[in-house]
Image (cartoon, rainbow, N blue to C red):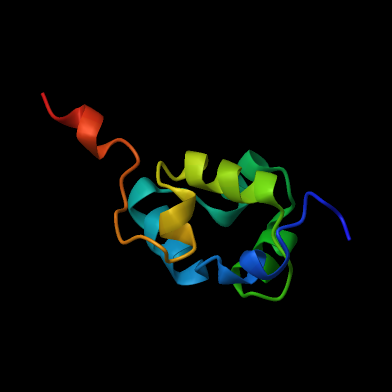
Length: 88
């Protein structure tokens, strides 16, 4: 198996959370796919849990959506990566 592949962890990416973050940020699947380096149809399959995620893709996904990997896999309910730093 590919060491880059997350394995079981990859199936934990919450597609519903990704989609919910895309909407207010006005990011399309095509744009998001380009950001993480896959094509739109593959991203669509990954979001539906039908394809494995690679660790690099999940970290790029979190960066593109300004959130954390923990949020995307449902380990945390804290959406914002930058929340503490935004406090003035």
